[in-house]
Amino acid sequence: MTTDLLVTGATGFIGSRVAAAARERPGVRVTSLSRRTRDGGRDAGTVFGDLADPRTLHGGCAGVDVLVHCASRVGGDPESAAAVNDIGTKALVDEAVRAGVRRIVYVSTTAVHGRGPFHGVRPGEAPIAPVSATSRTRAAAERHVLDAGGLVLRPHLVHGEGDRWVIPGLVALLRALSASITGCAAVQSMIDVGTLGRAVVAAALSPRLGPGARYVGHPDPVPVSELLAAVRDQVERAGDGAAVDVPTARARAAGSPRALHHLDMLTVDHWFADDGFWKEVDLRPGEDFATAFARAAPWYRSHLADSPAGTGRPPDRPVGFTAGL
Image 1: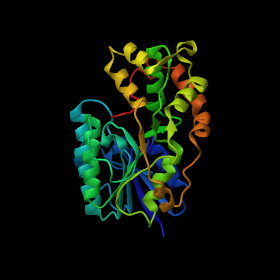
Image 2: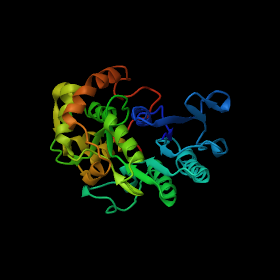
Image 3: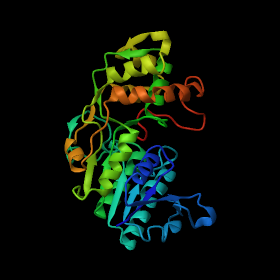
């Protein structure tokens, strides 16, 4: 029996890995929702639909068994975020329900909980307390999916080839400080994007995983000291290897609210624990951070070398250590 699976955001950082992982599954036929489909209809493996224009979603879920919603608007003005993440997701979910889609999965973010500390937090223990337009509208998207009996998956920091948020944002912070940082004792939940893609597909197809919200991250949180060392040794040595303690870093960043926000992230635990998830989807949680990061380091070096000095990003892309938080 063939399972028809529809992926939104299939050209994005996470969605592309989800689509690729789904195509590797026997008996799964993958279609992607695209606003660039020729003539606004169906193309080979794609169906037209624009979350910012709910009218275009009509009929897009016909014949679909499983919907995996990976598309989100991150950054930009609050109205655009609401149009895609809140209103667009509501329209998509309504269409899925009308079409009889039996399972709806939404890839969200732990940013819906706001700022930490979060130490070993398990599903259901942290309140929904978003602090930005992006995370508020993604929390609204979660509610639409959950109200329809769907599954919400919340990764924290996602790294790997194609990442233009986490490591580039961290490098931009270190460039602004002209130094690395010592004395950061916090830990962060992380997952490489390839493992996340496989995990999302496994969850979407698992008969054991029920509706609700779950965390998806490697079971072992990453000490920020290890994260900083990996960036320093394998990607970029900011300030010729100089290092400053946290109070000095705060003083240097005093004029930059963004840099101060990133420093707050580095010094506060963001550890979300859900070991049962991996057992329920019958999947290994992937390689440890050091192994996965070493494989992606050449891509990061190349990407950052092509970025404007001091930003760690292409000129048309926003940057943030925690996108949308």
